[in-house]
Length: 221
Image (tube, rainbow, N blue to C red):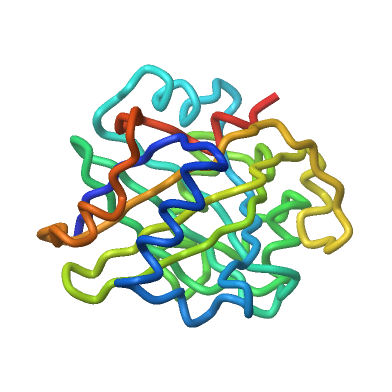
């Protein structure tokens, strides 16, 4: 299992302009982004009836995990089931493809197909639906601008317009309306064994300190 380093800042509009200028000089936009360098992300998060994932995040539990289903833009032909784990500040993410039809089954409470899936992650989700009572909890959406820098396998993302919805049934609806609940942008920096100094210099934002942040927690209401 491969773990990556990660840190986050909450930043404002003025910070974004400076970061974008510096990063554009040394890194490139994610090749999957649109012409403006951005793409939209929609994620359906799971939690149990006691809000285990939310409470563990708020309490700073050092070993935790959460499941989500994610797709980009309005393209429901490419959807992923993901499990993100964190151990002592290091992050790991595993994923597998899931169809729109399978996603809708989960939303509708039809979980049995997961048990017979060829994907281990789907079978794990089935087990935790059964013994942890995981269920789809809320939807998080935002616009992401991503810069990549191959040395160190670095990804720097600017996540803007973070919003949420409790309308789980409409997760795959491209016209779903969201509530904008978080005003700031989130800067995330992720890397493997080392963070190159040139990127470390680029992402310095005066007056900002690295801090734990969860989009899932930010939009829960």
